[in-house]
Length: 141
Image 1: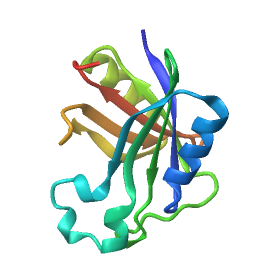
Image 2: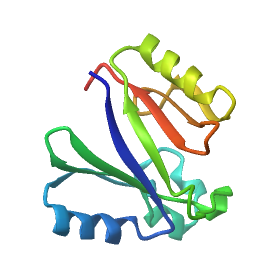
Image 3: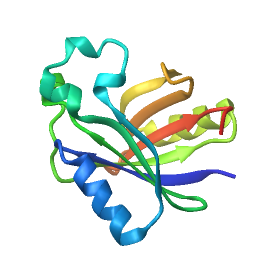
Image 4: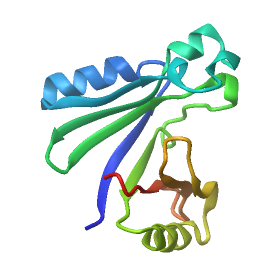
């Protein structure tokens, strides 16, 4: 079954926001990873290294809120409206491709479907209505 999850983008306050959501909604953090923990992070400024590349808050079974901090040094700018993605967890690579291609049609590809350093098949796009999507397939679900 396909699952969808909100993926929120913040300007350096992802930790504070997600801690707030945890306090309000409950649940537990399953991933809490800073940019400094990534390969190649030495190229980032000290400030950017302290930002969060990914936080996952499992609120309850099937409900996960995910977040990241943007990096202005990489040209990422938070503007109300682009500070979220809907994350789709596909069941197969073929399903991920189908969903991505259909959502991207008439929209904009931000990151083509490709294998990632974290071992997932992943891509990002904006649909023709301006909604941002992340499509993911991982056999290690």
